[in-house]
Structure formats: structure tokens, C-alpha cells
Length: 128
Image (cartoon, helix red, strand yellow):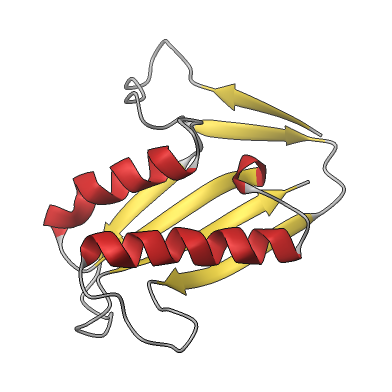
């Protein structure tokens, strides 16, 4: 499988340093579509704050990926649902750290439909 980032330089706004406009995936054998994943521990308890929820989310995503014999290197698309717009930077930093600085197409959406104690939810698509 080969992944190729596409960031056109002309006639379109520039991509910011933390994402790419598009990711081409050539010759994947399989895809993994992961539901929105929450910052919950193994007992279903919510992390106490944004940082702990982000750590739990990425731990949970790593566990799900491992079950499918994948890692964060296989992530080709990511969507974050944030309870509040002020969470954008912390979410971005957690994503960049979890992906080792690797850029993928990403979208962050502020929503009010999460439970009050759920501060962020992340869904991914991975390919191998």
C-alpha cells in the first residue's frame, strides 16, 4: 500500500502545517472504519478533563487498530467532534503527537450533542 499526500499549490487555499488537503491510498488490501471513540476507560468511566480524555481516546484507538493488526501509521482520515471550540488546540496537539507528526486529512467539528461529560470524540478511517 502506498499513501500519497496531495496539497495543490495553485488556485486553492494553502493547507495549514497540521493537515493535508487529500490522501491518495494506492493498492490497499483492507480498510478499517472506526466509530466515534470516546475518552472512556475500560470500565466506561469518563476521563476527568480534556487532557485525560484525549489520552484515553488515543489509547482506545491504538487498541482498536492493534485488533485489526494496524497502527496509527495506517490512519488515512480523521474527524474530531469537540464539545467546545476552545478544545481545538489541545485536540490538534494530541493528534499530531499520536500520529508522530504524520499529516492526514482531518476535520474538527464543534457539536452540542455529546453528553456533558464527553468533551471530544474521534473517528478514523485506516487502510492497510
